[in-house]
Length: 272
Length: 185
Figure 1 (cartoon, chains in turn blue, yellow):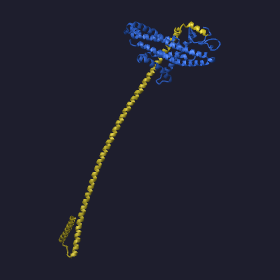
Figure 2: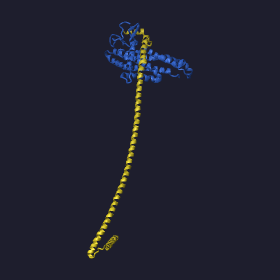
Figure 3: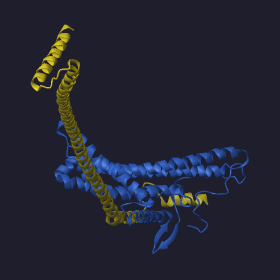
Figure 4: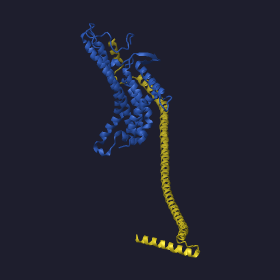
């Protein structure tokens, strides 16, 4: 790691039609690598980690401001907070788990939703411009929390054998294909499910970030000679993608929490 | 520079699907903090307030319902009173009409009686007057007639008995003539 490496994801000097001979600095895996900005006791601290911690601070600070001194007649901030809280509580948890069963999981789901959403939103915030959840470690942590919760709930609710039956989709009426179904179900529930749960969020944010970087870099790269109109198109695409990403960020946070709820619901459901 | 970064990518990240350890740790801590605050402090806080609000609203609704019930009962009471008052008024009017009618009848009867009394008194008076006039006339006419006859005849008709007999006979003759004339009419 030499000193001249910066946090820039591409080379500023590369322009189309320019004679320095370099090509389009396409974004790639290197767009997801960051130099450490500090080193604490051999622990390399980088921009993504910083953003993750700022996410924590922002979410807690906002809801502290909104709910810290909550009033029966709400202020503006409390009203916004309540709307968000209500969206997750009623719109996701109560919808899938019901009010009685779901109430216990509301704090987890609310934290998941807002934590993920803000992590995603960094993608379009100037200076940050990087979705924290496009580093797979973060989705993995969250998916693991959900996985541990619903697997332990399965065994707690149905006992060991009942839990296994639940996980394997045990159903006598299937007859000869039952062993096959059980193997597939077992693998699918226990291993594929947490993987897809994490990767769905990661891949969406990863791809979104690639697209944004691609159009942003292209807008700059094309801004030369007669290619300037193309740069304009690229710039419009950048704006469009930002708007689209804003949508995807919210949707992915919603989907992640919705899936978490449906996994828990499956764990709690009576064995069919 | 770009070559450096790409090389760095090749060195450091075998695949974007393999999670780097430090990030796992940071992610866990970051999320744990968020979850802790929501779980222990923020959501209990807001839930308490939401519950209070729900109760306040329900209390308000209950109050409104109570007020409505009271208003309803007052209205019914008022309507009952009004109906009673109307009934009473009708009864009074009826009574007054009846009283008026009897009063008028009484007055009429009284007037009739008074009229009859007056008429009867008038008749009696007239009768008495007629009788007095008649007797007075009888005396005067008798005296005048005797005087006249005495003068004419030159004979004293002082003798009372004779005189009286002659007068009565004359007057009876007059009466008779009058009755005949009346009958022939």
